[in-house]
Length: 124
Image 1: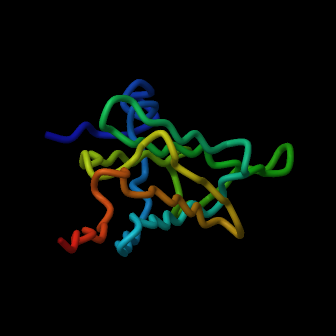
Image 2: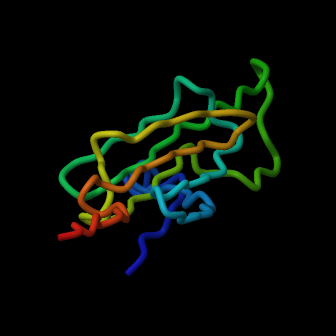
């Protein structure tokens, strides 16, 4: 069910968000997530983990000169939002975030118990 976003329905506009495209790459040590957030300044990004949910939110800062009104806007929603459920194999306490040129990079390492380990064999 979707809600129509228009100037006549401002509450729907406030609730509506853009879904940023995301690439997720997994390796032996964890996952790296790349989220495209064009138009979002670094201080407009909010990344948080609550229980097993990782959330990314970004507020777009598109400033128009005073007295100018846009006649056409392909980006009409002012914010991004995306959530992911993290597996128990990942260590949500050790998320590392970087933001460069409109791309948010999150590195989430695997938890110690989920990492591969070599078993020592005792010789008798």
